[in-house]
Image (cartoon, rainbow, N blue to C red):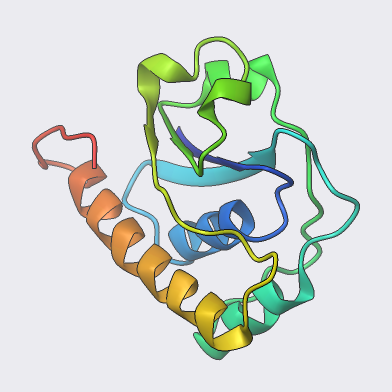
Length: 137
């Protein structure tokens, strides 16, 4: 099983949502994990609500810290503006998605972020599907 690792600042919003969206219907042989460069104590409840709106449950997910082992075990790494703070090895297999975090955003603005994540993850999954030509995004 190959892994896509989604990494954001605290593993409370963008990376958590990305992991859940990806794992709701992953390409054959792939799964996603997520982590943060500074793991918070709980995921953002708005992230869980916005995912439920599209039929995805994050369950008992709790934020976790990105480690060298997580990066080393990932075939792909997607960051959200935090690549410079990721462990060694992330740069060689990463791409950055410059999407805003949750701080200071309205629910409607966060819904737009969720929808953009869905779109980007659909493209990522298509590129990872068996027989797809290798791409970085």
